[in-house]
Length: 180
Image 1 (cartoon, helix red, strand yellow):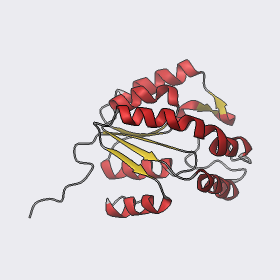
Image 2 (image 1 turned 90 degrees about the vertical axis):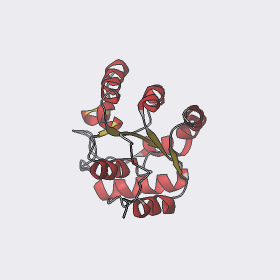
Image 3 (image 1 turned 60 degrees about the vertical axis):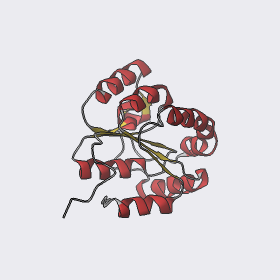
Image 4 (image 1 turned 180 degrees about the vertical axis):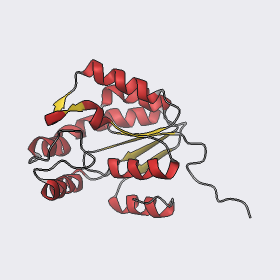
């Protein structure tokens, strides 16, 4: 009996984008384990302790170095570096969920981890009330969506998975035998 084909056959580099609190990091961790490739969180590269942004030039240099590797799952947006990342990716996963749902998830995450450092957070970054992140999710990130969609269209020759509901994400995990 022939081996079952997977959508991940031949895929070595996956870029995951979407609104904050959409589940990008959880999915990237799971895919990293399934495919046995490194997981790079752009938030961990971008933020210094205390959620202080790293200078853009330094962040971009690190980003560009990592995308040159042979295999990775990289999650995060950072639109200025997205074209280079998409150019190197073999697959793009776009978590295009409802912003209100992401805002609710953001609040739940804050409540669970308030005052602590989440395991997936950058070193020295503790969970404080996410007022700025909520504003970003609800208002600012919507302005970036056309940029993301344009880049996706420009990369339409690659496998692109667009998930629009959290139920689709749950089904994705199940259908592709990806363990959280």
